[in-house]
Amino acid sequence: MQARQDASLLPLPLRAGGNPRLMAAHLRQVVQRLKGKSASPARDAVTYLTALYDRSVTPRGDLACAKGCAFCCAQTVIVTAAEAFAVAAEMRERQDMVAGVLAGPRRQLGEPKSAWRPCPFLGEDKACAVYEARPLACHAFVSFDLQTCVDFFSGNSDRMNFTPGDRQQLLYASRMMLHAAHQLAGHGPQPGHELGSAVAAILKTPDAEARWRKGENILKEVPLGPPIPAAVTQEIARIVEFVRPTL
Image (cartoon, rainbow, N blue to C red; front, side, top):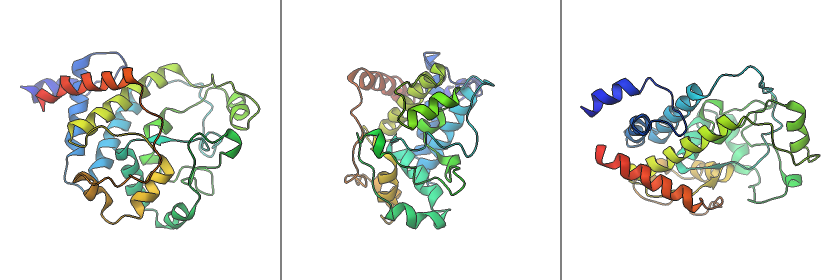
């Protein structure tokens, strides 16, 4: 009966603050993939959720973003473990970049904007080399004002009002789903980690994802991101308790 109910909901896009049954149906799909037996269940789970995000955002024709425009690809990106494993799985198909990522300097959380440097996953053409596996934060970070975006990332302005608010709201909902999926799949609460350091640690560890799935803390040496606000933690707990009986 649950499968029949979900079948009618899964074609629908996600809406922040929308139908909890719809969110639960999609979350069950993420958990199913995160517990799967493929070469990278984390990548399967993240691929499902990011594809859901992409088809749930409201299309708009005023975005200034284009391939090769990488002004924003210098900021610190915080990811869950599954997102880091998804990028690492993509990197293993790009062995030409692995050595550079492993040898590159690690980012320091909280570093000033003047210390920001290009993302290690940018290619020479300033396009994302792991675009299909990029984290949720990268999916959601778009701009409808190129000059304001350039001014912010060049250090000439602190104004950051160039990102669509509806996409940020959907990002928060998607991130809470991913945190809930980690718990429902048996991985427990997952802190955020700096993207480049997390992926480097995974690439240096043999069978990293399989060991993580068995409970080993592969990312224990990677800097943690800022703590999740208590209100968000409570909301994630409510999502977990809502969905757990239906798995």
